[in-house]
Length: 61
Image (cartoon, rainbow, N blue to C red; front, top):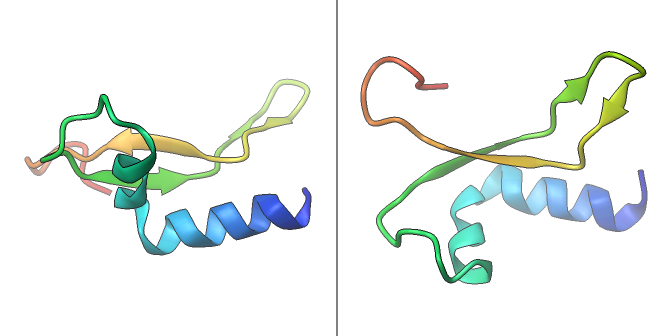
């Protein structure tokens, strides 16, 4: 993991909705959560992943 990866992780952990400023085709009223999951088999790590948040009780983090 490089220093820039840590910076992006920190920024998007604190303010995941910043993705709306970078990606113009997302719905402006959407909210997102940010995580950095590990894919187990051969352990491929993602730098980060955006998931749309559900407004209902199911799927809320």
